Image (cartoon, rainbow over all chains, first blue to last red; front, side, top):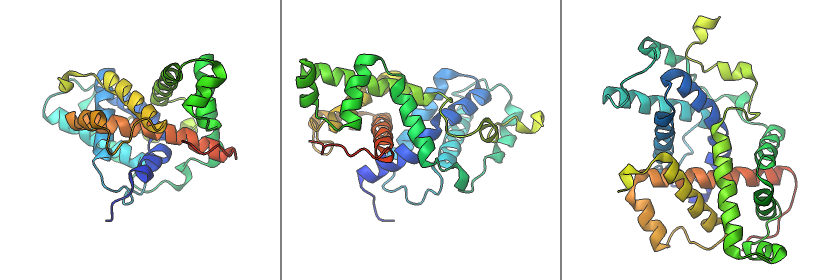
Length: 194
Length: 73
């Protein structure tokens, strides 16, 4: 497999993996019940992605993230890093994660735009101004600094703050990626609820 | 030392690097401080990928909205 450019991998992760992180986190929370471990598991999953020279073999970013995080948790359980899992008997039911590329789950353009708008909308005002000028209008940090009469490092500070808040928001499971019904498809306890 | 960093601390550092790469301040292939940060812990690479992916995701929203930005520096 030929190596992909760094930029292509970043773009693929941005459109195929990141929008599903919230769903994976909430599934992990239901399964393992420990927030601290979940941050570690998610970060480890991205480390594994970052070690790849190419992602062109991955049919579904969403399925990849579910499978990778599941594997990481199971490895940690084996090494007894996670001593308590709420219901270990549920491990078997994790097989319901479907591995087929979910065509209808590829986030459509309109939905993706709605997600982005929602992410930006929730930023604090000063932060949002800088973020919109930089990202939506493509202004340079220098130009934004000039417009507001502030230093470039002050602009950078707001840009970093905006990115941090957006990453935080992406951890949540309230983005309009899919209907609630779709989301419950991955719940380990689905069988019990029907 | 880096092994004791929390996921949250790593994400903060990654946000800063991603912003500096985006603004053209830092060349991701050559900047010595960034290179040594990336080499210090595999988690750093993952966190940077995630932070840059978030910026890319936002930029796709712009493309979808049909807004043509100024060329970036």
